[in-house]
Image 1 (cartoon, rainbow, N blue to C red):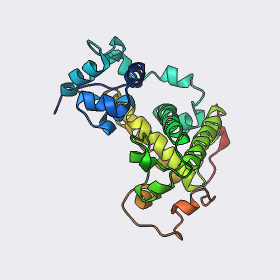
Image 2: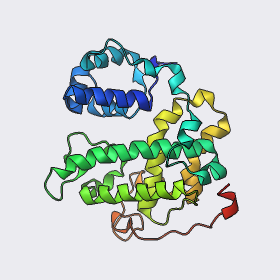
Image 3: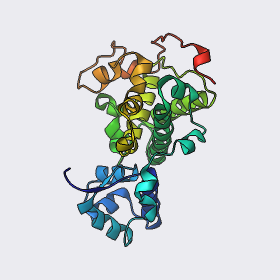
Length: 265
């Protein structure tokens, strides 16, 4: 079906990133040598599949004869036992929405925190007030609502990282995961989206119900799709709108609590 590709994985993405750093190559330089765009290279390092016709250029750039053997088909099968060992495993999500939803949270939050750290590091060496749009290649900028690009400064990234870390602590305790503010909704939405490339690579091993559980669990938590409707549909929001950046940290939402006995085993 279409162009053949090499299946991506978190392990392969990390190997590409580590090798690039060993060679002291920036993402821009590596992408240029490989003949791909910087955003495309960033996706490879995040674990996305690699088109077969691009693989030679990537290997040549990294001085590899071939991709690491760890990128075998077996390594692309989701290992739920490994996810369950993570400090971010949420028994609440597993019980409420299925184990693939809990795996999505583990994988997505790991990737998102890693990407955040990359952008925070870049902004830390720039003047106060600098934003993601001023970074040569931002890991997060393509995935954030575009209207508020100039608001995504060091302080915002720090708050977003703290929000994700807070959710991981809640997850590790088996407590209910709930979003009371837009930034909490955004954090969970980005976690789900960051896991998508990896989760979709194993679709063939999933039942249809499993696929729904990893791709829709955040909307089940929210009870709506307002975050997509208002932040990702090119609507203009004035500062009185509850989804305007000025209100992202306000506690605005209430969710009916689930039966605690159903959340923890």
